[in-house]
Image 1: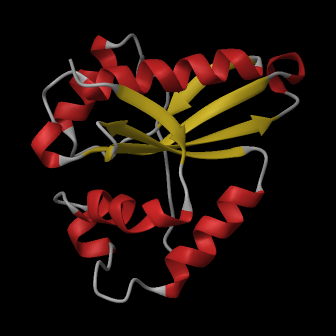
Image 2: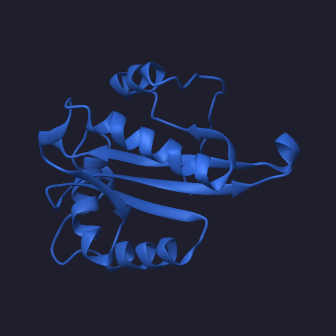
Length: 152
């Protein structure tokens, strides 16, 4: 059996992460995987890595990065001042999708939120990602809100 591991992303993982972010219908138009990798990705990585309320994580299989997500721990006054966990940018390498790795990664992320004392875990997913909606609902997430964004 191949060993699955989770860890904080390192600078050397950024190219693999960007490749996964770009490898879908939405990310292909938003990301730039050209060589050399844009310095903006490295600046973003440094900012995330320096923030104790951010965790950019990778999932590895036999040492290969096969998944990623970003956890943000948000302090707030609502819910009696409780901490909430926000899961973003969930991706599994195309050749490893539909193998149960996504579920393992989300379960790991929820566990990290529990360890930090979060009262709630939330995430957003694009309304066009119908497979993702079914996936998250199967894992117990409920669609409770409408989300809004504005491009700047």
